[in-house]
Length: 320
Ligand SMILES: [Zn+2]
Ligand SMILES: [Zn+2]
Figure 1 (tube, rainbow, N blue to C red):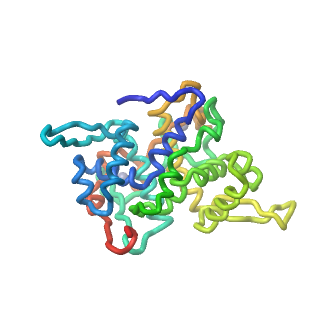
Figure 2 (cartoon, helix red, strand yellow; figure 1 turned 120 degrees about the horizontal axis):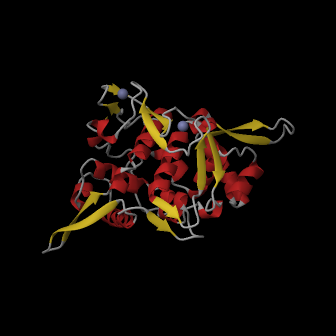
Figure 3 (cartoon, rainbow, N blue to C red; figure 1 turned 45 degrees about the vertical axis):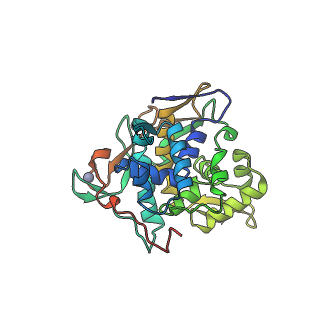
């Protein structure tokens, strides 16, 4: 399955991307699909996921074109799922989320294993780069403007918060803080606004279009988990502005990998949601990742998955 055309005026690439990737179970299923899980029982045997959650997420990922369903037995009918190129190409998102979570929100009980680059043999963190010129980039290196489908009301997924609110569903909790940022539509909107330069409460409310109580609640929560911090306003010291902390700023590669993936696979009929240029080379920005140890560009086949095959299922801890 190739690029999906999105109707003009509807949810844009960012909204669809957040809907698919802002769900822990979707990421969990994809992660193990990339490691070789194909059949329903392969995922079930990993533990932690219920039948209803697995069925619903496999359907979502198949409809989203990330998995392809094929009948391998007729009587009784049995299906297996293979990862499409679209599904395969989310590895930079998984790798940057993994690395950020490990560095900034370490889970003491079930620590994430390190990522290893087989080409150089070292553990690494992924470094965000420009595909065109190969330079390292951060939030200041890019020029971003809103495209024709970039309106915020079209950038927030409808489904994620609704799905997340099902109290009876267990959660894998592997990427707990990542999900605080992308698994909630308004948190994701606030983070997006912060990367676009919003500082003051009113700016967040205006850019996101979120109800005031929700903006206040999300800013408070993002401050509590250390992604944002408050500082007194220079001109009105009794008021505060909100800034991304180092932890929040370090999330930038995840956001960029998600945007690049979304733009590659989903296209609004009325144009892109966000237009990014790399200031230094002047070209349209597309994310690539480099190895922090040797500097080479990372390819999925060079990232060792040995450690990742051991499920971090710890009974009674994060999986409860
Ligand atoms: Zn460049
Ligand atoms: Zn390397």
